Length: 614
Image 1: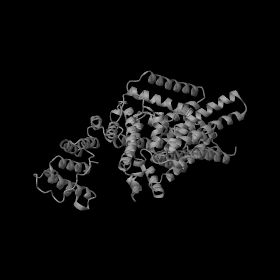
Image 2 (image 1 turned 45 degrees about the vertical axis):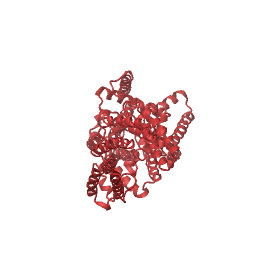
Image 3 (image 1 turned 90 degrees about the vertical axis):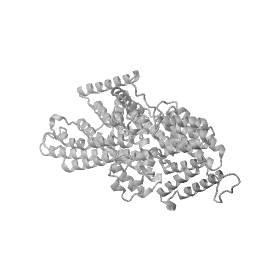
Image 4 (image 1 turned 90 degrees about the horizontal axis):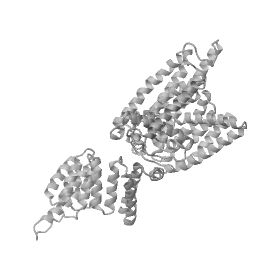
C-alpha cells in the first residue's frame, strides 16, 4: 500500500472514530482549565501562563495555546474539540513516521490502531486533556527529528568510511547539532504541555537499541540524551510538587505505605494491557483499589509483573530484545501515574484512560508483533492478517464513536460513569450535585413536582455514595440539600452534621447548617452558626449578611443594625454590588423594630415583610 494511501486511511478512520466529537461539550474540570479561567480572558495571559500559580497546573505551553484558542472560539466547545481532534490525528501520522524510522514491525497498523483506540477517547473528547494530545504531537515531532538526524549522521559516516550505518558512530557526536537542537526544542514544548513527556529520552534510547546501537560503540548517544533528562526530570519533579502543594494531592487519601504503593503500581501495570486488548468496559472513573497492606490480589500482581520482567529480560539475553524494549517504554510512559508520585485523580481512582495515552503505543506495538507472529504460524495468506486488522479497527471505531457521546455534557458523563462504576462515590456525588442544581431551577420556576423528583434522585445517588468510607464531605452536604428540598429538615441537619464532622473548617458546610436552623425557626442559633461560618477560611460576605438577617429575626434588631453598619462601611456604600441586599436588610430591621414596639404603637412606615431565606 502506498504511503499516501496509508496516511489517508489513518486520517479517515480517525475522522470516523470521532465523528461524534462535534457534540462533545464541557465536562468536569474544563471550567478551571478553560471556561472559568481568568487567565484566558486576560490580554497578558501568555505572560501569566509562565508564572507558577497562575494556572491549575504549571503547563505554560499548554495554557499559552489555550489562550490563543480562547481568542478564536471563546467558550464554544466545538472549536476546542476540533483542535484537540486535529492534534490527535496529526500525532497519529507523526507516530507512524516515527515507528518507521525506528524500524518497528507493523508501524502502520500500530499507528492506525492507536488513532482509533477507545482508550484515547478520554484525551481527545475532554478539552482539559488537550495537554495529552498537544504533548504527544510534540513528542512525536521531537522523536522524528531525532531519528532523521541520526540517519543523516549514520549515512554521512558510512559515506566517509565508517564501519556502516547499522553499527552507529564509534566516536564524536551521535547526531548533528541542528537536529539535536530541534529535537530538544520540541521536547521542551512537549514538557510544557505535560511533563509526562519526560519518558521520551527513554523511548528514543530504546528505539536506537532496536535499530542496532550498543553502548560499546561509543558514548555519543548517551551524551546526546543526558541533557533531555537533566532538563526533563527537574521539570517533572516540579510538576509533582505543584500537584501536592497547589492542586491538593496530599492528605489521608495519599498516605500509603511502600508495600501498598508497590501493589497499586503492579496492579496498574497489569490493568492497562488488559483494557488495551479488550476496551469494552471503559470508565471515566474506575473503582479505587484498597490502600491497606497488599492482599492476595496485590501480591499476585507483584509476582506477575516480576515474572513478565524476568521473561522479557531472558528473551533479550537470548538476542530478542523487542519485548523488553516495549516493556521499558511502557513502564517509562506510565510511571508518573503508578502511585509512587501523588497525583490528584488518585483520590478517586488509581487508573484512568488518559494516563495511558502515550503508554498505549508500546502495548499496541507488542500486540501487533505478537499477532503477526501468531498469524505467520497459522497461515501464510496475508489476507488473514489484513482481515483481522480491519475487524479490530472497525470495532475500535464503533466503540470510540459511541464513547465520545458520553462527553456531551457533565450529566451524560456522570451517568455513563455510574453505569460502569455503580459503587463509585465520586461520579454519583457529582451527578447528585447537577441534579440538585436542576431541582433548584425547577423550584424557582414553580414546578414543585419536578423539583421533588430531581431531589429524590439526587438523594438516592448520594445514599449509595455514602456507603463508601472514603466518600468526601460533599456527599453528606448534597444529601442535606436534597433532604431540605424535600422538607425533611431534621434529617437534613443530621446529614450536614456528618459533612461538618468530615470537614470541620469548610465554610459552605457551616453555612448550610445555619440556613437549616433559620428555616426551622431557630433564629438565635442560626445567627450564631452564620457567624461561625463567616469566620472560616473561604467565607463570603453573604454569610455575614445572612447573620444580620438571622439576628434581626431573633428579636435583636439593634445588634443586627450595628453589624450591618459595619458591613456597609466596609463595602463602600451604594456603589457596591450588594447594595440592594443591604437595603432589603435595612427594611427587615425596621420591620422587626416595629414588631418589637409596645402594643398600640404605630409601626414604622418603612416596615417591609421579612426577607425569605435563600
